[in-house]
Length: 409
Image (cartoon, rainbow, N blue to C red; front, side, top):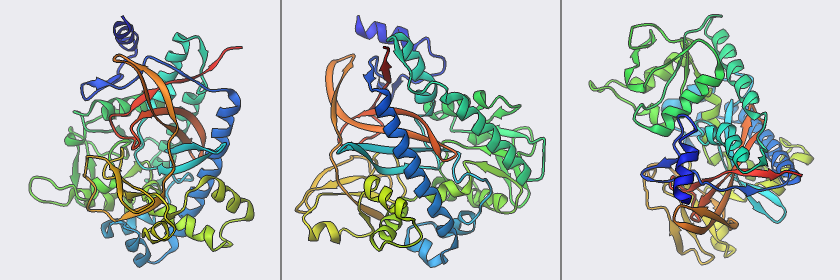
């Protein structure tokens, strides 16, 4: 009965992937938080976002050698230094952990974050079903405005006031495709959705659709730049690098902008922590207080944790969904790891380990408990929709989406 109720409910939500990889994904359940807690998450998110966005200006000014030492691909260095939009990232998502009455950031997904339609759209339907108040009420309008503004701002940068706008994603990935289609819908602008494999690049000339029309603004919400760089066509042409060159030469605008990829590198957290440790004047006193409260000790080597017998997490500087993440105990012994190993080619950061809270939830297979991770969106750097993922100690692509709500009255 519960399984049938869940399927009937989610089938009413158009173009949503309530099941993924043949498994239950969106839970027919709700976690209750109060308005005060939502406010604490929003405040922490604004503070953390301000720190990340501030560091971007510093990173654009450092020598190439420093960026290479942080693990950025050499092919992207010119792209990384571009500042094309007022906001460093239009849509970014913080992964937060509740700890000692506050929230710690474990990473920023600034370039190609997912979890968007779930929090900005689906969460409201679930709250209505459970007679709860949606803590994300009004956030879709905020997202819509930011997406439109980013497109208009991008169009001006490439010299047009009537841009040809294309939203793209891998057509065979249900989550990616429907995320892009959702953003296209809320943008409310004349545009097309064209799958990635139907776009054509002419070196030095432009990006073209399947009918030969040149694209002005490409919204590539789910196509990471680090994957793009190594993209080749069937003839071995470096088409990914050609696309970056089009952006660098002002012949194409991409959203999220280049600065979003600059901040996607997890080594940025090691830079922030290093500046904080030396009480560098780049950050104000209040910003140092925010870093102390909301950031975790993060380094490019594990020596600090091994010396002080502290548990730590090893993560690739570019990676997603827990892939290639390892957790080590106080003795430096491997405690757990994600079975996927897709990002071993990248250098790693080492971050202090903190336990994720464990909470109960309902599934089609019965009552379960899982580790809770808070997803908190920043729209043009300011707090927006929030929600929960629950699953293993390392949150991965098999973790559940748990809707949240505020009890009425």
